[in-house]
Image (tube, rainbow, N blue to C red; front, side):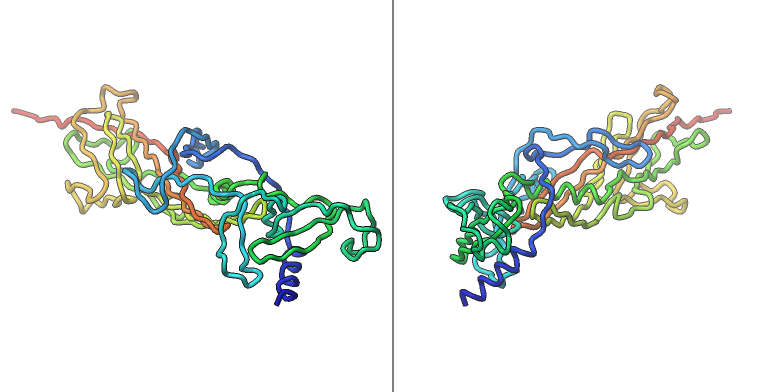
Length: 319
């Protein structure tokens, strides 16, 4: 059995790939600091102070951010090992530093084996080096040859940072605004009449759900994003938080209120710039990620798009 496990580990070692390591700031709540006005996509993410939450526990505003995750992890499934299950491990130990790619602790063999030793795998001393690869989960200790030092996962990206690569691949965008009365100089609503708001032609990039995977530093993360709610700044000092994408207005609805996303103005927009209220819809996304034997949540806010609508007062004619 020991020989079988050794061959399995060697297979995993020699098949391991190498990825560019990316170092990024520690986790925090994430906001979009600049939105492309044409596409509504986030151009720059910045980190702002935040407190990590507990996985599975909703906060006052939906799931809380669950932090960065651990960069070093064990996963024996490729060797047919299920116990211990995949999960974080210390990035260093007396046996060396942990490498996700090799799934073991790495340390140089001291002293290096003499020329002709099988551990050189046909190479000569000075051509790369021979390393110990110790897997405490199975008790296996083998030697490997490598031209360069095996990747040190303790200096690599965290699962959250890899998840953000996956999020970038999603091309998340602000919603296309649907609103009645329609924007434009030839359309005008009335004070006291219902305004309907909705996400026009919603798709995976504007409301989700959408799933992408990314790999870096020996970590593969799968992330799924969906909109939690849309906050509508109506331009009159009112914010309306809609838990759905909203219902598109139809003329047959007449003067009915929107069933899920609406507003009623109490003042004309005549005193506003361009005689119109600027309405801004800001999407709040929840992204759940999994991989490296871990799970987590990222909150992304700030994807927004704006339009203008005119609101007038009804004129009563008295003979």
